[in-house]
Every structure is written in C-alpha cells, then in structure tokens.
Image 1 (cartoon, one colour):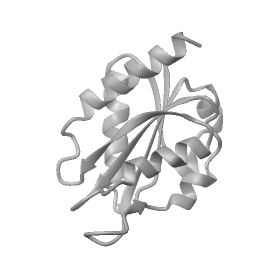
Image 2: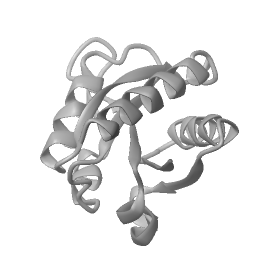
Image 3: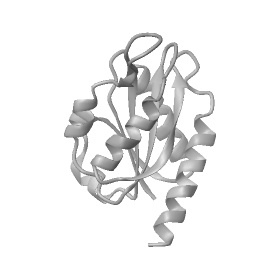
Image 4: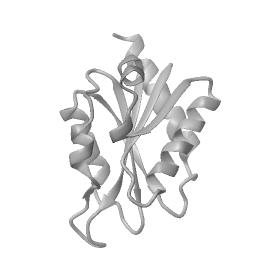
Length: 145
C-alpha cells in the first residue's frame, strides 16, 4: 500500500510521531511519504491508499482542548474516500482532540478509521500496534470497495 503521513507540529513532537509512524509502516513493506500539511506532495497524496493525519493538542491543561492549527489541517487537499487514521500528541491531557481530528477527516472527505493519542515524552509507546491496526483496517475497507 501507498501510505501518506501528514501532520501539523509546533514543537517537533508531532513531527517526530509522524516519522515514527512512517517508519513503522515502511518496516511493514509499505511505500511511505511523510510531510507537514503545508508541504504535502500532492501527487503522492492523490495516489495514496491510506492516510495518517496528525496534530498536537492545543488548549489549557484542564479544558478547551482542540486540534492544534486545525485551520491548516482543514486547508490541506481533500482526502476523498481515503481510509484515514488520526494521531494526536499531548503533554498533559489530550481531552477529546482525537475525536475532533475525526471531524476534520470527515470534513476533508476521508474515511475515518479512528485514532490514537501519544504523550510527547513517550512517543514511541504503542506506535507499532497503532500502525498495524490502522493498516489492517484500511486494507479491510479497501478490499470491500
């Protein structure tokens, strides 16, 4: 499968998570491209079979959590019909940001697969399992189309 990993990052944590996700998918034999939203390779994204879309958690520690730079996520090219898994990085608490990333995916026309949050000081924990599960679900949805 051809897999695009697209992200927004403020401090570099989400960029690092995106690289880890891309590396995990590549280790499984997939063709992978990793880009911030403003530098997406449109040809690759158009041809991609699946997308991982990530951002950071914005808001105060206890409330008001939202996807960081959500406007930039919404400005990226549409991902019409593409199975898309979300990922969010956070420092203290992610709130319901991953569900809001699902809303962004829906607005962009993607097929929401669900997502995962990653604490910024433990980014590698759970990446492999998340990637395997997302790729398996994407392959399942592609094969039924």
